Length: 177
View 1 (cartoon, rainbow, N blue to C red):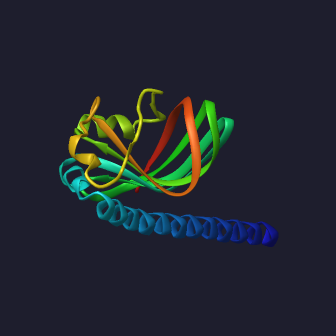
View 2 (cartoon, helix red, strand yellow; view 1 turned 90 degrees about the vertical axis):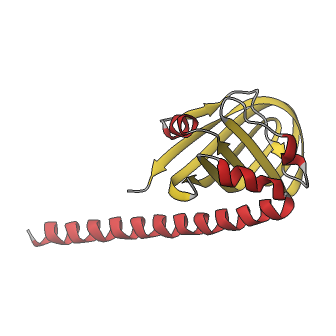
View 3 (spheres, helix red, strand yellow; view 1 turned 180 degrees about the vertical axis):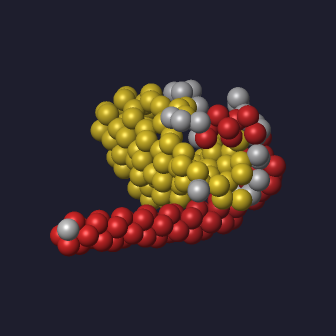
C-alpha cells in the first residue's frame, strides 16, 4: 500500500512538472508573439488597421521552414479575439515543388469576421494551396484585402529560401481553460 501511495505521489509530481513546463513554454510564446506584433507594426504601420478591426488573429512569432524539393514548416502561436488572448495554436505545412533552403519568419493570420475565427478554432483548420502570405513591408498592407474572411502576412527574419511549391498549412487550436 505504501508503494502505491509513493507511486501516486510521484505520478502527481510528474504531472505538475509537465504542466508547469507547458505553462512556461506558452508564456514564452505569448511574449514572443507580442514582440512579433511590435516588429510587424514597425515594418508596416498599415497593419495596425488589421490588428484593430479584425475579429481575431493568430500570431506565429517563430515559424521555421525549409526544404529541398519536399519541404515543411512548423511553428507555435497565440490566438487573439478582439485583442485578447484566447488560446494557443500550432501550424504544420508540407509542400512539394521547386524549393531549396531554410528560413525563419513571423506569420500572422487575420480573421475578418467571427465566422472566420470560429472556423479557425474548429478542429484541424487547413489552408488550401491558393492561400499565400503577403510579405510585410512598408506600405504593402495598404492594398491587401481579405479573401474568404482571411488574410495572411509574413515577415522573414533569417535565412534564404527559393520557393515555388504547392502545399497546404494545417492548424490546431487549444483554448485556454
